[in-house]
Length: 100
Image (tube, rainbow, N blue to C red):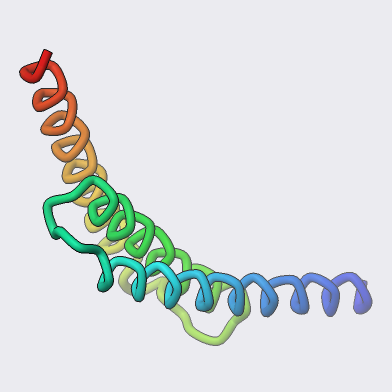
């Protein structure tokens, strides 16, 4: 199992690099967005939040950090972010339907 474990670790490190690069690219794109209230900016910020959420999980998978002590807080933050996402979608749908 040693070879499989090292291949998995390599994959996790590659995934971490890709997540970090994507995070930076989307952060720069969000910063360059012309209007903060634009749909493009909102989607970029949503992507940045998704990438930022993956970073701690990948670090824990690699064994670099241990978040077991604050796992409940993570679930609460995730639930809160899903409520905000639902509110964002409802707001956009309401704006679309009102415009018809």
